Image (cartoon, rainbow, N blue to C red; front, top):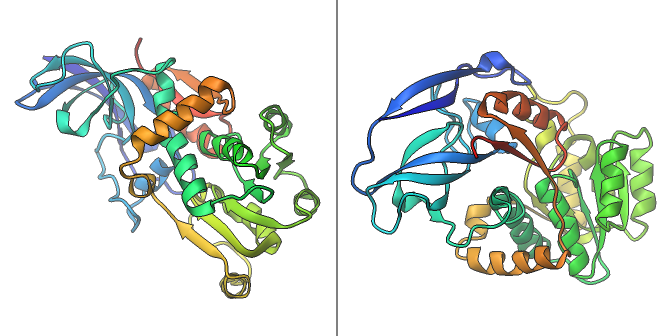
Length: 338
């Protein structure tokens, strides 16, 4: 009988999550039944969407119940199998969440028959974040050569890929990040312009970096960054809405006047396309094409990536809270076991 250590939702956060909103438990797992496998978690992905699942509020996914294991995609190893096609030692993508071991139905797993090196990239540039960038930018943003693409949270796993793919497609890439170190990294990645959203004159810097306006804005943040972007959008600009991390810890509506009327006026006047999307819906049936295209770009060095790896499941909470603050640098991953 396997023993698993797991982190569950203990309380619903008010504002920024704290350690008291989580609880660590040790549980015994039953042997896998027919069609199931016992998995050992190797790497756990930490992503901003998890913050929304902690709230008991309407969203695109059901909220976590109190006492439920925190959700998350994992790279896992099969320890025991009662399912055809999977054997001990096989490596799979799973939705095991924040736990060291789990029993999962085999039909919910994606075998990594040719695992990437390092394995963690299956959760980043060659996983859900990379596919989010690829499908959101190319399907909704549809950048043309010579157009200007702006992306927020540009050193994150989604934003960095968006900017580099935009460049591959012949567009100008303007990246927005927080702090001098991250801005310098964007220049290393080849972004045409890199801006610090913490600068007092950020709006003025954005205007100077986009003299011909903005044709595609890949939205990851919202808040003050969106306020500066909106006036710069060109007629027929496209806005794929991937995330709004600036407001994930908000406990109420933002202060100040209601500017929804201004937004709708701009949508009408400039004939903007503003579309939210979920990667699993937009990219349905395109996984192999994505892996082939993105895999080639990574191999050729045309798309580079950075990972922020934390050792040990016991440090997942601190890493998660730091990620929501913007303390991470690259794709946030927890190495759970070797």
